[in-house]
Image (spheres, rainbow, N blue to C red):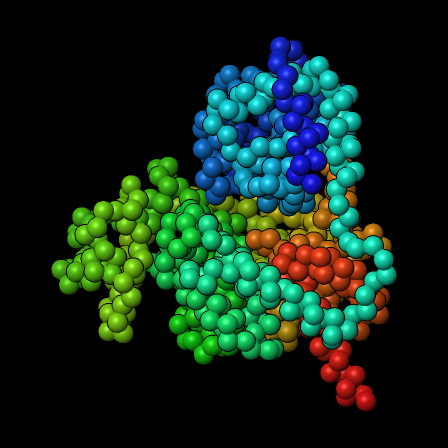
Length: 613
């Protein structure tokens, strides 16, 4: 597939450029309600938003859309802005030859997923900033990630020349490339969903996990390390049903490494987005609601499975981070904190110089940190040392260390970090699941769950339908499948945890809306009215950093049916589940959430049949 795209576009990039004149554009992002888009409001690039009006202008002027996706806490997005989007010469190229579009990926999750898939197929890699060139008809044609200014300018120059000289060939190439994407399912008759099929799929998935697992450092890659929370959640449940010693060892190794080293902030709580190294020591310093809302229940579940009270403490500290740092005054939870502090220093709120620690701590406290954090060694970061127990503390030292960490927290450094103040429906659904699952029985977390459930009903619904995001006083109405799926799952977890019939009724209503809006016989659509021509229905959506929205909705509907007997919803989720099977058979590692739902469903059905027999 990658070779096919490269053959299509390799020749197209070899042309030279001459200037063309276009109608003047202006930057539409100044004062935007999205903090990320507002950051680009002063760029000399004439940014537009991704909407039907922008696409219509591209068609009128017969120009390529330059669609640049990023998010508030993305480090390399900010680097590219400083280097390229604020460069007048590069801005002039973009404004003259393209329709420049800036996208907050958290406001357009479906578009983001489709262009990430395109970049992966074209380049073999994907990530952010993601800069895609899209034809006026809505077909992705080319994509690059971060590029230094000289390289980026050359890319724009070559593409502008290509479009000027051969725009019709370019359009045809993009259309043909879209048509040769592999089928998302398998041809032939659908397999029967049985306990034996589910067991075989589970074994295939576990075999794929064993191939990917880093058994020395933990995690599911050997280069940079991401939490990969959907995998961890599914693996914990698989182990709970059928314990396997190697899986128990791998899960605990991974959870220990994530908690002990650079992925987790032991001072303020919460997990960073990822580390750039295989041993979890060097994070990018953004903290995301999405990651932390998933990791809190994972650690709470692991605490129960492995009888590890330290995991429960980590789960609670993660929920406390959400309450203390990401909770909005009016309710709901913000999206993320930046990797940069308010002075523009990456990691500035989290890194410590020895001299600052000496001023803050007494001699005994400093000596303990000097030993555990190896403060006598050269600082691994320009701004100092990251709190990390490189030498594991003894039981007595752990108690002393906790007191020191409290003292460091009281300096209030976390408050120096800018926050993305969007309140996103999907992510608040994940947060509701987190408090309902990982916090139940703890008064402050119970109160947070109740308040968030009220906030969702009072502030994230408009005329009975879900909105996507609230940013300040502005509502973004176009809720996507992700928003519905995670909110429905969160409300279902809340209704079950607290036996709230009102929440169950709301869950039922939103579930019906979701199935009607995003599912058909052709499969799942992430958006109601996609503008990108390649956003076709799929029988199953894969997991990524977030769980599969289709699997999440199917699973939540299965649980809902146990309390609300809705025959239509029951039949829909049953048919959707069967269509997932061929996809998992082909790509078991890409679909852990769907696999878990199938195993749960098949096991429950077999148990019910055994009772009847």
